[in-house]
Picture: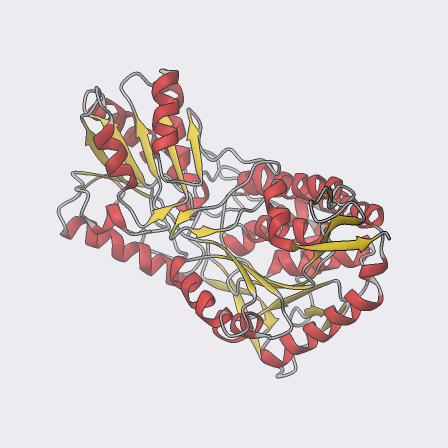
Length: 500
């Protein structure tokens, strides 16, 4: 039994949580919602309220659009690319300076272990802003030799879209905000960002740092509220030119429908049911912990979680035995306990959803080797669960659970590998996949055949700001990160000049 060591809250966190409800950030100021309505944000480790937050509505989105429009016309469009890059770099420096406070706030609001927020969420957010700070001065068009006549000079400009709406999820609140803001700001857009109602605190804290970094008032507006009201108002607003959304496939489809009214640009990073394939020639010292991390990282609340585990029948029993032994020993508890390895789920709603899938898996005939039942008591705790005896048609093998639940299935197709590729691709999703083998030819062959936006070979959940991320099929379209994300936030203008 590991010793329990509670984190002593940073003084900046304590100060942030003092006073009345947390306000919206519009036009460079922290303001109350026009309706005056508030909602509670809850500590998932206890089920108790942390603090109240103002609830934005359509009228608040209108205010944010006005502020963003003024900022774009009067200030931001006059800022040089070099200065944009400096502001992004300054923001990264401020996040680094406030790293411990942000890590604690993220853990308090989301529930994830403090070790994960310190060593994954916050460093990745810092790197992301620094990466796009470098891109600000490298966005350009090109001169094109045309065949219409030697006197006609043609070139292109890559210009910002304008006012951008961004809606982020609750599983990586700060990191998802940086994924959205980095490319949008580097390319010269202005932003209205809505945080998830379950986890609004780190976005509000980030707004304070944006203010300190020197961004002109109204360039970034951050609102807190619910999807059907504030989120829908962003999607449907006629003056917002582009919407970026990360979340469930179901909500993504609704956003597509709502955005069609004014044909605004849409990019979607949606759900997944990612296959993770372990061949018998894998290096099991890497494959087993990799498969565990692929499903239990962030309590399985990861869109690219390796929730369908395919293991060759030659090694199936041994692999599952080792995984089950390790999973049963994971220390579960409050995220602010230094020794916690797996925390609570984010909300009672998510707890109920995953609990229902546990019951459904058992009813359909699957066998939980470890876990399988929600933890009784305060907080939203689901134990690490490994199901064996799973068939491809079962709900737990086909539907996104978004919890620490893996459906393990054997396969036997060593010679042709066609069947395992078919099974892996037999899903409406296509966000990510994993392959574990020491045969380089097999690794490339399988990786090329998998219908997924990211394929990890002999690793899982590796991310970098320079490498694009996004989905195939109903896992969405458009790419976050890397140079590919610049396409989401720029539009190309062709210019013809008659030199005669």
